[in-house]
Length: 122
Image 1 (cartoon, rainbow, N blue to C red):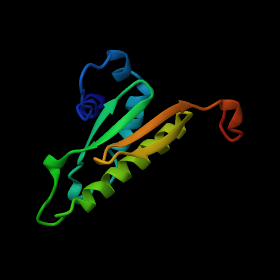
Image 2 (image 1 turned 45 degrees about the vertical axis):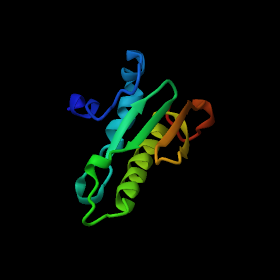
Image 3 (image 1 turned 180 degrees about the horizontal axis):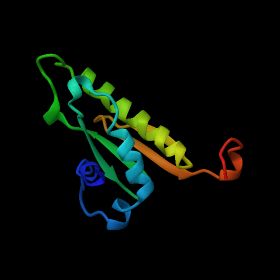
């Protein structure tokens, strides 16, 4: 099952295997791909960097007949980003989400100090 989710990760340029093997990041992406999407198209691609996970729109999965402006496609990306942020919080990461002009969602990750989370079990 884990291999299925890894296929959703795209590699742009040269990427060190160490980033792709980060089990926390893979956990986050596994939860991100469970997000709802218009007509279950799952229109997202992921890129893992050192402290960032990018979510790219996959326009090959657009539905011009029912979503000519790609509104639902981008709503689906937002759902995937929210799932990823929730999973990141579960693993002890803070997130900072930005969106580029071309629709790429960049989620910057930084590890929280576990002592600052009073409800987190140790």
